[in-house]
Length: 338
Image 1 (cartoon, rainbow, N blue to C red):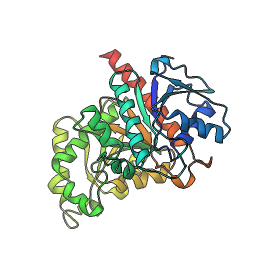
Image 2 (cartoon, rainbow, N blue to C red):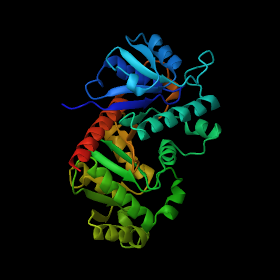
Image 3 (tube, rainbow, N blue to C red):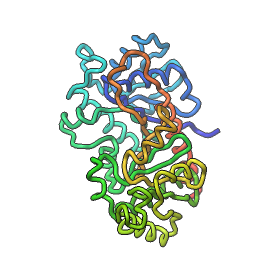
């Protein structure tokens, strides 16, 4: 069966549902056949949610992943000791929690870069609190890129029979067109090609979405397809990448779902995430592509309104752990072949 990968799980915002969904994954035991999980977070918060929900899990504080002994009923935690448990309250984020989440991410990224863990899986954070704490990043993706010295990276999402990668990420819709460039689209197509190959697909078929209705209708509804997207596609093809012409988004995702394409390049956030979440709400996975490490994440937020109430769904976290395990094993096989 092969060695199970060792995976660091960052706890996410201490006031959100991250601790709860992590506790539920450990309590169910469903993840242990796939990987060896270690939590990077605050042991006091993890103990609090486990006791509150009456789970049969014992927290063990460890100094390093090599000290871990992951089995059902035991949670190994690298304790960052950065939450004042006396002041901790579910659903009430603050600047201290914004500072804490960055410390978890930095620790986990270093563990992965040092090859002390095989992958990192992240629970949700509050970007506003992270920025308020003095960390000027729009999210996990940009922080991981900075920590690993990565210049070309992207957000890939997996779920509902789809894989997709975004050409632009967190932008106001009115600003998207200005960020659609040949260079940016070409970079994203290359990332999509490599990302699909990391799943064992040797020659990926890449479906490229147009930006405008009907992919511009020959320039009638916009020129981005002709001026920026198609030139990027043609250059990608010259490199041996199998990328489609810019296609209308209203039919592209149907084709991808029915195996015409292995991965889709979407031009903006909601163009891609709308179809994906329609098919896989609650169990989709976010993957940062282009990094020298494997990082997957839940595809949902902190859900402060239900934090600590015992009703948070851990499915996306479980799927993120399974996918990170699969990618780690695939990476190991690729290295063995090289």
